[in-house]
Each structure stands twice: as structure tokens, then as C-alpha cells.
Image (cartoon, rainbow over all chains, first blue to last red; front, top):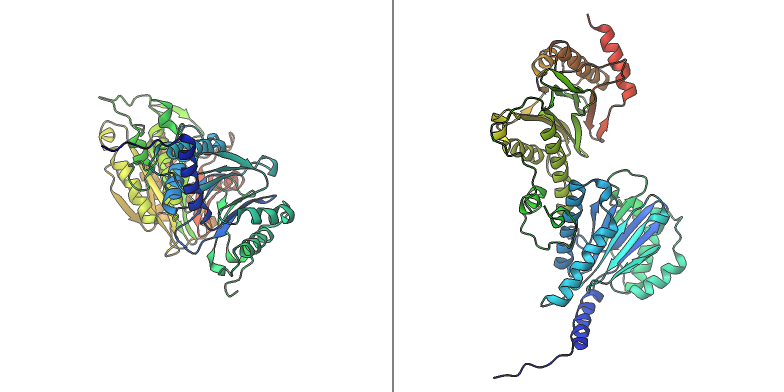
Length: 227
Length: 265
């Protein structure tokens, strides 16, 4: 008969966290910026069909880095959560905070109870009526919920990209200016050229009513087709 | 019904709901809208009446009067029967008003839900077929007197033309090339359109004949309300073109209505 080893809980949590962190840190970075004109989400994604950035509700967007199948499960569950709430009550009752809390509970539960934690880092962006009421919620693999002001960076190179953005990002930038800033900063952090077609975007447009989520065209991105 | 079912509480991951269908999420949780009743008396339940849709040069147009009746009583004067279904389609309903409004709300949510999960919109035909399925699901109640019959129209992004679809109570779906009407004043409106409609009419003509068809229905059918200039009640009209769905403003409709009423014998 084999004697089960005793593993102290501190060690167990640390092992799991290290495992998940390793998975997340491999993910290509996504930058989320709060601007006067809306909230811009942009990241490198060479796949045109497997999205990392998506619409959740009228004024709420989702971004995820890490394992695709895992944050995709979260994205779909989030859309169901939001649509169900909006259908049962009213569209105005669907909030980013409610969704971020649900994500936080879910990921926390998975981290401590499942065989393997999710290797993801996700973000919920909510467009307010003005820039002061915009909200960014980060939810980590262990369910840790934090909010961010003015910008957020997910995935590889988080530190260095954040440092650059802290000094260069201004909220009065146009979408194109902000996108250009994100593109140069990410390219620099990655240390290699990134194809013009490999940028995935999402934009919560403050000038729109009801569903505000759009994707930027190559023109708006400041990238012409042949560049 | 616990709060868990209504979109609060933790997420349900990998819920066994069918693909990207919102209705199957509702069914999974036992909260899909349903009206299970035996031997219904339809007396006193408001009904929505005349709606119509016509094709015109740039796309399609959908119009509905504003009256809901319960028996011989006018239940509501400002009911909305024509709604955008998504960015490129519109839906209108006649029949039992309460059920119809719920059906539209579910239909809208379903289209949006699919679009968000799949990343692409359903094809126009896909939307029409889905709506047919929703009507069919209501068949038992239809035979008990709680009938809901929609009209659906939209702009097809693949062939860049407007299409319209009519339905019957058993969920039959029919493509219409010119115009379609339904509701208690529908046959009167159809007779008018048969004489007035022509292919490729411009927007102004399309608006005029849509309003006049409703006026003509209101003159013969007590359950249909014509434009009421004194109370400022005008029909609801949506146009669907390559630029998407847009609502015709009350200012424009007041002019059209006044002109149409002036010209009536």
C-alpha cells in the first residue's frame, strides 16, 4: 500500500499558480485603452477566425489571453449570462461589474477545485456615458478581480508595454493614433515585425447607441492594405 | 424560479445548450416563455391587427397601424407592431399582442446571441426559417384562438436586394416578391396594394402607398386604426436598405398621412 504524500496547501496553491502563469505569459499581448471617443482593444492575432476580442453586450467587450479553448468557454458563458440577464430584466441591467464578478467566482472555483486551473487572463471592458464612468475589470486565472484605470495590458510583455503606455497614452487621442501607439509599443516589446493583417481589434464607440461594439477597418487602424 | 436561472450567480460553463441558440439556454433552465392553458377564452386579450411590407427600389419597407383591440373595445391606440430584428432586418406581428411582443423580443435576442457567439450574422433565409419555427411552436395555442402571425423582411447582404417573407399559423414560410399583408385588415390592404404597387418604386411612392393601404384597411376594418392627425398618432414604418434598418420619423409620416387623407374620396 502506498502512503499518500502530504502536500501543504501553500505549496499546492503555488504550484497551480506557477502552472497557470506559465501558460498565460506565453499569450500574445492585448492592449486595452480608454479614450474620449471610446474604448479600444487591440492585440496581435494571426488567426482571422479564432477571436480573442469580442462583443458581450451593448456596452461591454471581452478580451482574453492564454489558452484559446478555455477563454472561449468563458466568452460564450459570458454572452449567455449577459443575454439572459438582459432578456429577463432589461438591457440597462446588464453591467460589466456583474459579469466580472461572475467570471471571478467561476475562475476562483476552477482554480481550487478542478484538476487543472484555467491558463487564462481575461478582461471585461465597460463603456460608460463619459470617460470617467468607463470601467476595465481584469480577472486572473485564480479569480483575482482587479479594476484598471485608463489602460490595461494582458499577456506577454505586460510590464514593459505598461511602462511605455503610462508615459505616452493620452485620452484625447483619436482611435487611429491610439491604435498606432499600441501597434508600435507591442511590436517593440515583441522584438519582431508583425504583419499588418495580424491585428485584431474591438472598439466600444461612444458615438453609437445601443450596440456600440465594432471592429476597426484597416483604414481606421492607419494600415493600408499594402503596407 | 430561482435567481440562478435569470442571469445572476456564477457562470455555467460548457452548458449543454444547443450550439449558439439562446432559446435552448432558456429551455435548459426551464424559463422559455410559454403559455400552457386549457380551453382558452380569448375574450379580452388585446389583438394587434394590420401590418404590411412592400419591396421598393432600394430595399423593403414595413408598416403597421397602431391599434390593438380586445373584442369590440379599443385596448391601445399607440401600440408598436413593427420592430427592427437586427441591423439588416425587420419583423412585424399581428394577432395576440402580448404573445407576439414576447416572440419578437425572443427573436431579436436570438439573432443577436447567434451573431455574438458565432461572430457572423445568420443569413436572411436562416432568420426567416428560425422565425417560422417559432410560429410553429405556437401551433396548439393558435388553434385555441391565440394566434400570432408575423411578417419578416430584410436586406440580403449577399445578393444586395430586399426580401420579404410571410407566414401562416402552422409555420409555413413564403417568399414574397412584391408585397405582403397580414392581420384582420390585411385583405383590404392587399387589394389596395394590388392596384397601387409597381416594381422599383421610389421611397416617397412606397411610403405613400404603405400609408394609404393602412388607411384603406382602417376604413373597412374596425380593428385597424388609421392615422390620427388630431392625436398625432401615425403608423410605424421601418425601411431596410443597404444602409440597414431605419425608422421613418413622425414628422415625415405626419406629412405623408395628411397628404394621403386629403386625397381620399
